[in-house]
Amino acid sequence: EPEVTQTPSHQVTQMGQEVILRCVPISNHLYFYWYRQILGQKVEFLVSFYNNEISEKSEIFDDQFSVERPDGSNFTLKIRSTKLEDSAMYFCASSPPRRGANNEQFFGPGTRLTVL
Amino acid sequence: AQRVTQPEKLLSVFKGAPVELKCNYSYSGSPELFWYVQYSRQRLQLLLRHISRESIKGFTADLNKGETSFHLKKPFAQEEDSAMYYCALSMNYGGATNKLIFGTGTLLAVQP
Image (cartoon, rainbow over all chains, first blue to last red; front, side):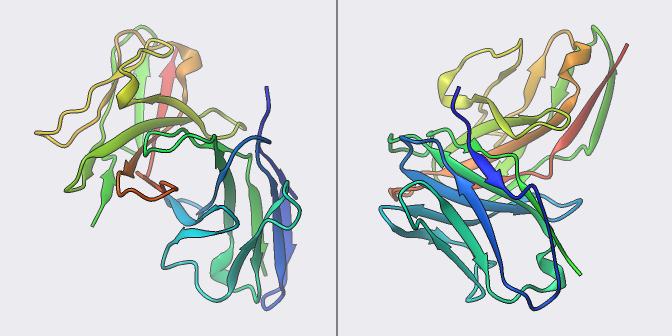
């Protein structure tokens, strides 16, 4: 059964460094998402992406964040200059080509980002 | 603002006992509600959604718009049900994508 994959599983970086988190969504999916979960807190929506552009973003997704689908398979989240508070588990998700709020999202295993 | 509340961080029951994981939501429109489950060392996966009105692994959930609730129930808990359960809300606003708003999660521990 196809799954969403994410690399790396764990990323350690110094404050102020740029990081790129990578995701490979399920191949026929059209809608893509990033969420994050700070330790002990709820899973929070960051951004959604469709038709090669951002569809919606949260207040968390400021100018330090960007997303890209560079080659039709990968879906990346870049944090330009990491802060300590960016330490979290980052989840990628994708949805099949079916519109509607009841469309299931398939999650990746997550990347644990640790900013020192 | 839209919000999902799961009042219990931990619910511990014995095998064979009934389970009810509570979820309340705040949304003025017509919501879509989901339960996602995360077993130990596994990814988040959909357990069920209210629109399907189905029973998955013995779990059911009914949307009660009057009480703005979507509680997850199972009559007889099994040890393999032990996991983190997240209630999530999606909103019908006509956009292409539909972000999920999650509750804080309830850890269900089923004791033998």
